[in-house]
Length: 268
Image 1 (cartoon, rainbow, N blue to C red):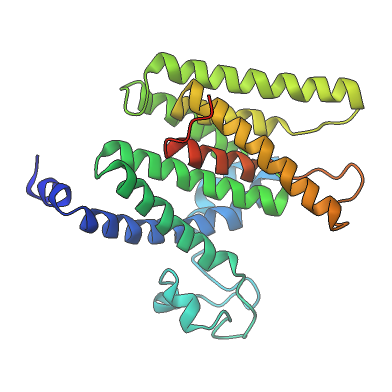
Image 2: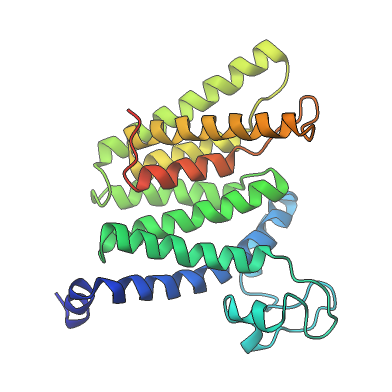
């Protein structure tokens, strides 16, 4: 073990603090993904543009298109310094930006604090950050882009090929069972009601979670997602804010269930 590794093991607060800082920085990057990926996902003919959109153009105001100064690009601090408005045109900066940055710091910090400063904690933290981006995209656009879901699926299988989080067999079973279960439910709902109750992206996402966490945590994830979705739908119905046959994004519920499962919650 290196000197740094020994220090982080002996001083857990330091490992957690570094994880929070890294999570804030990665949360800032997630804002780029959430802001730019849907435009590509909704226009398949632009698929070749996606890798370049991660770095070009640089950070800029979407209203006046002026470049954002480096000190205004600092996670959380930049938004607070600007008081939530562009320095040049005074347009409001969506609260999504600081919220994603804060959530990124919290998720990575919690992962390292919960699991300890090791490879598994880092892997779970990055997995949760990807789920955070997908939940944000699904909330805003009701899509779960393949450009993010499929790499998450394959990276989970790759991580567990070395038994980092679970065995390779459990990862394959979790991915297959989750995908088949949600696909079966989607097809059954369409046969009974004549409409889609959920998108195929949800089935791909639960397969990715199975690849990362294994079979039992995937079933826990699904149960929590269904309960959460039902409660949200009930509340919106009582508030008369849910229209007839309106579909609600399922991705955030799946992400919440996966967070609970990754922290050891088991309902089976």
